[in-house]
Amino acid sequence: MNATKRSTPEERAQDPAVLIDARIDELADWRGRMLARIRALIKQADPGVIEEWKWRVPVWSHGGIICTGESYKSAVKMTFPKGAALDDPSGLFNASLAGGTRRAIDFHEGDEIDEVALKALIRAAVEVNLSKPAAPARKSAGKAVAKG
Image (tube, rainbow, N blue to C red; front, side):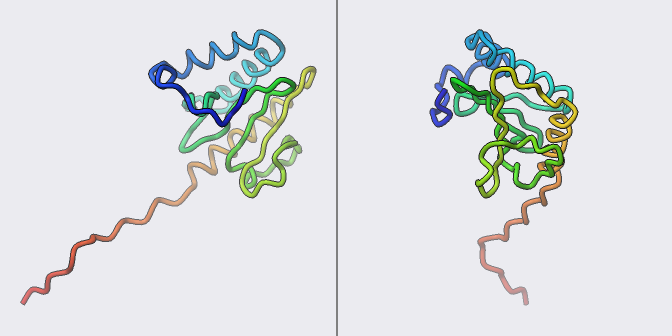
């Protein structure tokens, strides 16, 4: 799966949950099972999560993107766009470690998921998203008129 491709108009018109279901079914091997397990853990960690379909991959959001779920030949990758801002005491991040803001977890065939640590990481990503400061109010572009 090439994560740089744009979603097609047909994909954008479909329910993201249906597209994610289809991706899981399409994989039909350990990657599909892994992606399904990751999806379930995300929903358990954050019942308010929103499922989206962007860049032809599953995306989970709450106040901003929490993570994506990409599938490759030898890995299922969870990419956290704000991963560098997250505490990772269990050391789950094992990919994209040199990036300035994002971090990722590559899951390979046979890997066990530390469910407690992953759910904590997901909740931390939601916290970071929800704690972002509000955008400053825009100033009017018009000229001030003096009254007098």
